[in-house]
Image: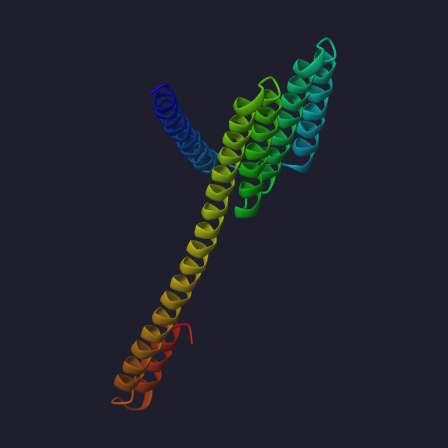
Length: 209
């Protein structure tokens, strides 16, 4: 009976954790989407370099703070500092060059940072608890990475579809314009002498021929 209760408890806990992981992944996707829409103008190279230096400075300061800690607390602190630095740099790269690829890298940086910190925290556990902790961290990283890859593929597919649609629309507009020009020219052919010349001149001016 005790084993059964333990299995039920663990099963419930696992479902709850996986639900929280999905919520975090969704929140990240929404957050990055909103940041894309909020970008009003591109970042200059000087701004990029200035922000990059600030990120490096923040990391050095954070690492010095970690130096006052010992054991696994120090390892966790350093992992968190590195994770924040890598995320900040990836997001900076995205803001500097907003593309599907840089957005993907920013999301992967977040997944890697979360995983690194989570596995360090797992070191504070023992036995099966540690094993479960590591597997949960891997599951979270896998889900975040998969979500990033799915979004990248979808964005690329949408871009191709939009490009094809735009080309098709341009072709249709060209065909329609040529057809209208042919009709107008045909009407001019029914005229004679100066009237025909004037008609053709107006038609060419209208259709920029």
